[in-house]
Each structure stands twice: as structure tokens, then as C-alpha cells.
Image (cartoon, rainbow over all chains, first blue to last red; front, side, top):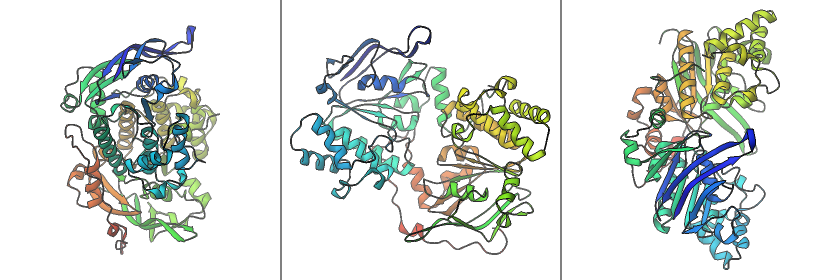
Length: 255
Length: 288
């Protein structure tokens, strides 16, 4: 469903050229969920944004659903892959109601039966009709993230791109959103690409997990291998240790 | 636990509202010795408000009431703003989540640290500079002279948090309150900052209150944990025994966490029981 071949993303030029992603290749078959982990600046979000078409890629090729994605995306291709962002406080327009937020993609893509689609999408994410005409500030963090997911689903995409979808949420709300994502993936056969710094969250949703650092995809592992500590790269091992809580052994504290 | 540094008995923080008072913190009682105490809970549980109330940082119209709020021999309830200003930094200090917002963007970091020293010890510029450089060294910054002249935007998040710790500890407080000190940092940097905080608190024999939503982090770092829900402490447990927690809220939170190596199709969602909101009995007599 998604194939990335030797993709590089660069910012700036000449001496100030930054290679945010270097020569990244990966393949996600239909219905699979793949996770990318790494620290800030590792390039994981860059890869996701390149797939989403939010930033151009300098080299390599990106295929979604067998179709090559040019840097300037035709409108129709945007329907295939939709994105959910980290911060539901920032990703929803503060002065637009849930109804307006959900109606926008329908209008942009000239789809019919707007009313029906909006109600279906709201039901799908577990929101009721009473939420339809509320503003974001009248919703909790979890409800806002549900609206963001509904907005992504309303175009009936085949691919869902998830950029830290639960890291701004409380543990109990995170569980609700993760359960929702699991159910949506099962019911709609969605292909997912997810970015997170939380290994447990990634391993909960994803089958395969790529570890990124400094723009490079260091290794590809599975949720099972990760859980059993079978990661080869020292950086992956460090990430794994840090996710288990505070462990001062082997921490280099001089800086 | 030996000597008691801080006693909190029936602390209440109230914000008046149109539909009556909102009780953000309800009868919170605990004591802190030379130990590392964790406060966990979700947003709105009152954990940060508790920390801010101890620091005298609750702004009007918010009200702080307590049967006892005592730092060593000082009764915090009697203090006015000037009194708190003498206390903050000198006897009790606070590290917040994001150093980008806690540091003054237009003053070099070294000067900011030295300023604290000058304020509390009436020291000369040279003395303060010397003390600040020593503090930067003690938080394991290899080249204190270079970092001293840098501005906040020139340092990384982890470095910024080291600088915050240096600034907070330069006047030698007894207690450090750290409110989500590593939540804005990458996991490997989190470990460094926690290791430094741990070392500083131990070597100086301080008491530490670590406020965090991260259950794993708190249970692996602290000695003792207070679990807060809707403004009350619903459970106190030894950090290493968090998995043996009894309260359904704590158990629900732990169950809702995805776990590496234990993949479940569905995570158990927390079922909030209205009975958790009911006022617990207030602490009586001397500190609990």
C-alpha cells in the first residue's frame, strides 16, 4: 500500500543544507501498521510528512496504492492518505464547530451526502450528535482527538498517518484512542503509518517497527522482538532501556 | 525517613466560580523527609496545584487553606508575598516542564544563575559568577565557562534543564519540587536529567517532590508515591510496589497502559466510579 524507495528530504541549500531524512526505504503491505520510533530530529516525522505530501522529497520515490506520488499532489491523491496530528488543541480550528471542521474535506473533494457522511464519521469515532455543533474548546482532549480522527476518516482513506496521536493525552484517554484506532483498522482494513517516541504505544498498534536516528532508518524490527529485547543497534537498545523507566546504569551524564 | 522537612496537613486549594467553589485540592496531607516523593495523577488531579500551593504560587482569586503547612520551623500559611520571595530558591525551589519557558530569553544563562546567588546571599558579582560556574560544573556541564555566556535559545532542552537545576539549587534549598521536569525531553536525555537530579538531591540531603503523569518513571525513580484523583490523595504506596496498588483508580491506570511484550487486543478502559469523588476523611491531629 505504501512503498518508499530511497527517499531523502533536505532543507536549505549549500553550506546550510540539512538532510532530515536520508535514503529511507520501506514497504507497508495493505492492512499492516508500521511504526517509526526515534528521538526529536531523528527524521521520523519528516518521513511521515513526506508520505503525506506536506513536504517535498528531494530524492527517491513514494508510492501509495501503487501510484507514484509527485511532489505536487493532485487533489484526488490526498483522499487516499489522511493524517492525524499530535496535538488536538492545535490541529482543530478554534472558531469552527465540529460540523464545519468535518464539512470542509467533503466540500474540497466535492463529495455528495455531506449530512450522512458527517453523522457516520461521528458515530464511527464514538461521538454523539450532541457534539456536532460544539467548538473545540467545549470538548475534552480525548474528544478533540476523536474529531481529528473523524476528519481523517471522512474521506474514506485507505491509509491513516498518525503523528504521535496519543502523546498529548492522559493515560486513560490514551487507552480509549488506541482502542478506537485498533477497531478502525480492523473494520476498515486501514493501512497505518505511526510515529511515536513511546515504544509501548507503538508496539501496541504496530506489527513492524522501524528505529530512526539522525535521518536514517537504522533497523526494522517487530513488536515481539522489541518486547523481548532482540534489537541489534545500540541506539535501539538505549531507547528500549529508557522506556522502562529510570535506570541510571550506563547513563553518560557529562555534557 | 529521618527528619521531617515539610508537613502538609489538610491542604485545600479553592477557586471561586459562578456555580460555587471549585475545590482543586481537597484535604491533602503528607510529610516529606530527605526522600524522593512522587505525586502521580492525570490532568486536573491537583498534583501541580499542590506543588504550586506549597511554593505560594496560587494566584488570586484562588485560595490556599491548610490546617498545617510547615517548612521546617516556618509556618507557610503566615507568609505574605515578600516572605515567600525570601523563601523561594533559598529553602524550597521548583523546576518546571519546559526550560524554554522558565529561562529568561534575553539574559545569558550564567547571569540568571548568578542573579539567584546575588539575591539570596547579597554576594558580589565575582562571587556570584564563581558560584554559578561551580553549579554548572556540578550538573555535569563539561565547559561551564562557555555555557555561562550562552542564551537560552542556544542550548538544547536537556542542557536547559541542567541549567534550571543549577539555578534552583545554587542557594541550597532543602526541598526541590520538580513538576514534569523531563516530559518535554527525549527519552535518553530524560535519563541524564533524572540521574543528575538524583545525584544532586542525594549528595545535598534534600527532599524531592517529583510530580508526573508517568507511572513507570515515578515508580522507578522515587521512594514513595502519592496517587491523586480529583484533588485528593486516594492512595499512598511504596514506589517499588506500585503494581500492588489497591485503589481501583491506580489499578485502572496501570491496566490502561500499553505494555511491551504483553499485547492485548483491547486495553481495559478506566471506568470512573463516582464514589472516588466523595470526600475522604480529613487528617486529624498531628501530621499523618
